[in-house]
Amino acid sequence: MPPPLSWIVPIARFLYEFIVGDDWTVAAAVAIGLILSGVLNVNHIAAWWLIPVIVVLMLGISLRRASRTTR
Amino acid sequence: MTGLWAVLITTFLASAVEAIEMVTIVVGVGATRGWRSTLIGAASGFGVLAVVVVVLGAALSRVPIGPLRLIVGALLLVFGLQWFRKGIMRVAARGLAGIGGQDPHEAAEWTGPGMDWTAWFLAFKGVVLEGLEVAFIVVTFGAGANHLVGAAIGGVGAVIVVGGIGLALHQSVRRIPRSLLQLIVGVLLSTFGTFWAIEGLGIDWPGGDAAIPGLLVLYVATAVTYITLERSRALGLRPAA
Image (cartoon, rainbow over the protein chains, first blue to last red):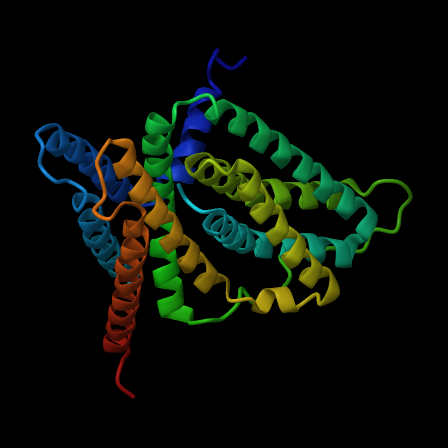
């Protein structure tokens, strides 16, 4: 008989694959960027530019990593 | 406030990307094993998806708009970046080619009486698995834009259009440039995800809603630049003749 709550692990794994996908560093960078944006905003420093910069940089890093692993 | 047309276009294109796979599976199963059980299986799958959209939509409609935009924006951005990245890699590698290949579910034709449960299950599974991403985009995008009904119309419209093409011209659906569609939707989801997540933090965009086209231009330019770089990198790796 499976232990209680054993269904949580496969569902969590499915949600992780579904939303985060195969490169967790992109999602982590977005999360850190949002936290930093919030901190900058609380200190009255313009923060709207941070996430677009992170998106452009992380896409490049992720694509470069993907093309290296497929060589 | 995001306009109704932006919601309709984005959810229509996002749903079209997944509907191509969905229709390819359903038409493949229907053509090889018979249509009755296949169509019942597909309809059952759509029923499950409708319940998912209604339940998730009702849950999200209870969240205040500020925190909702932060959560929905962050989810759409992370999810959209997956499609953005895959779209760049696929368009760089294959250009505007469709999904091509053989039917994914070649099987013997069903001649027995009653329901063909294999056809039912293949069609049901194809619709539910491919449609979950559509349901996620429709609900989150519709909630973020405060246009859940418009988002649902865009999603259902795409399935009807692609399904109609698939039923009328079996092989044509495979030639729709899915990679390019995926890239366009990835760019759109990343644009709105960025805008809403920052707005949800209480940060003002310069120019207000006019920042959305600005973000779109930045991300399109990013896509074009990375596709060019990926292609030149692939050419550089090709051995000399």
